[in-house]
Length: 282
Ligand code: PAF
Image (tube, rainbow, N blue to C red; front, side):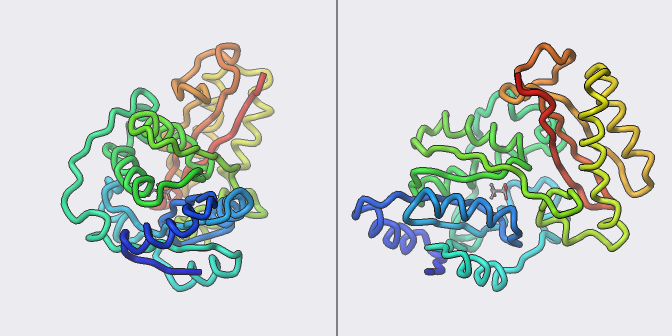
């Protein structure tokens, strides 16, 4: 496994594979890797001869500078883990390499970027589009892999790809959960012992809401989730929305969408966690 910090060197290493007709897969990450990331890497390795994993905590997507400062960074452990699963190339640049000058590009990401995370984290998705587009230009992968925990992010990256048209195929990979149901996230390591004990209640509540939804309206189901979690002292729900899986626009009636997805962002203490559940696939 090669660990590379410079774009020129990365392009050279990848071209050896591409020139030999090998397919290139990219797994963009911000490090602090867990089994959710590893499932992306394994899928990438199954479908490509060259698997590039990028590790870069991207400053332009953090609207909260405190979150950026405390974002977990575990480069040595990450490389060990990636080596153990057979990753081909780790790309771990520093900020100057990715942003030698300020990136002033503003992407037109459409309505999928305006709701939920887009509303509560202004500038976040434009920052994601900036870094993912730079990675697409640097790696020129055939396929890129993203986890469904960040459900809205995948829709936004598809919108970005339509704009820049690099021809990269975007692959979404299901959420990986801890045994107790908590969606795996690098942020979970920042939870205190008590918060970690309570955090599985997010998925527990979403799962209960699936049954609740069978004979309740969309609005009642939304209230059920928000009220159940807010009744637990550690939690403060930022939003819970039930949206159409393609447009990401809120639905008011179960029959108005082929696939309805409930997306949550909630604080557990000061740690902001997200998760989602699919209600119905017709
Ligand atoms: O999902 C993430 O970890 C990040 O948003 C991504 C896609 C690596 C871009 O920095």
